[in-house]
Length: 248
Image (tube, rainbow, N blue to C red; front, side, top):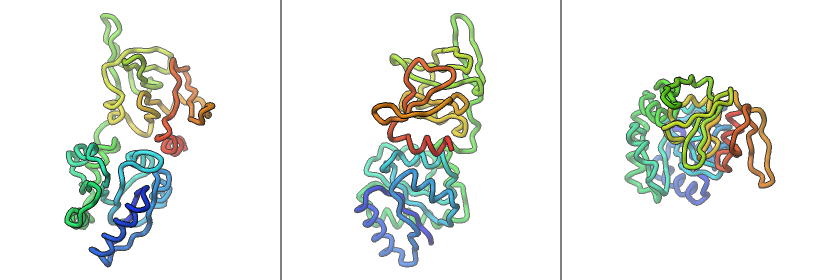
């Protein structure tokens, strides 16, 4: 059984590897990676894996960014010190979700489930659906209100969604700005991740709207869009590596 550990804390890496070797002497840990970028590069090569142990919060971002950049075919067991991500994973029927410090019985149960799913992709497909890459249809249009009119706008006509003054808006490629009821969090899971990327807490941008990317005085990535945005479209530091991978 071949395993990958994606974890940014060296001690946590070593503890998990030791527990796995003790419980499953036959298991081969093929690599231990500490970042979103490193995981994307490793998984892009298409290694043969039977299970992936993945910490949610990594050195350069949230592990969910990995799924936006590369296809993950092996069952994933998420590990974290926080339980705030658990609900989505369990609702989707994910393989398992281990809270740190990881208990031996919980680890045995999780690996047992991974073995049972080796010949089935059902579990990972449900997990990917939670991360925005499932088989569900993506949002093809948004409906906005302008006075007494209701205007349907196709997703291909939208340049970006953004928050401003505690309200949410969409901007079309023609420079038309409309207030929307949907939140940025809700839109992130509804939009096609190949065409849209959430660069920060308050902005999701279309690939077709990106004119250029540069760094500001603080070292953060800033997107220049077409049409121009009414607010600065800066990329959060946690999403920067994932954003660059998505662009490439």
